[in-house]
Image 1 (cartoon, rainbow, N blue to C red):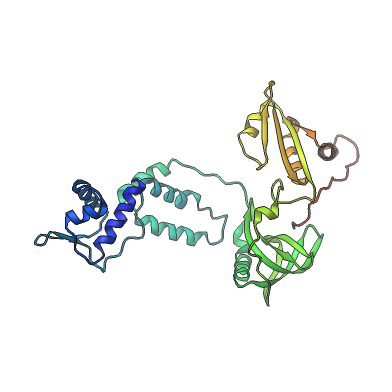
Image 2 (tube, helix red, strand yellow; image 1 turned 90 degrees about the vertical axis):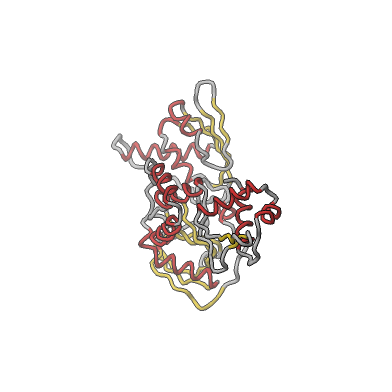
Length: 338
């Protein structure tokens, strides 16, 4: 069903429920369609279960004022998308309230006509969705609820946190701006009074959290994408680097077909290899990504990144018993993340 017909049917329903009794000519004239199109639309309403009435004596159409529209009136495409989300994409690992989401979606799905539901179901039965391993969110249910509540009330949070960045348990007062699911886990982002800057805290590492009576000034203009900036993933370093890599032909296609970063530029070279360039803030995150490709990637620039990868490689050789003492792990820790 196209948008024009959908809008026309909604208008037709409004007219029939207005209390005024229309004959066919008046309906067709108001909708600017032919009588033939009008009767097609009326048949469509009847097929959808809308109980409009026709008075043979007055030749007028109407719908009782006590009739309420069903919650949905979906096209086949919309029904398919909804059922795909309900049955395949409502991932229990992403949000602790997934059961309520599934129940709500199933109630909406129940309003879809059985014939359409069976048709969409036969398609969905042949669809599989596999998720990357992510943190178990059931354990952070109460923490996430507390964060949501504090953000809504604009009240500060007293937080006890196991901080990798600070090397142990810390306490801070947090002005929470956003809760965010990023890649594998839930985080709260806000101003940390201890650090005197905006920080990101992983909910799983929060040892204790309490809502305080004290409020904080809202930061309505806070945006996660601006906070993360040009980080490779989520940890923003203090310096921006232009990265140039060369991927061997064996993995060039796999790398090229994915948009890894918003600044990404790629060029396929004559020998089948791939030149890959990005501009990012910090080197630590992309270094681990590069190491995942082993000997199928070479760092062309900057020199600092080449040295980090070489140091990791020496550590790996030492760790796997090829001789020599284990090296110190190279560091490039960006501020603002926990």
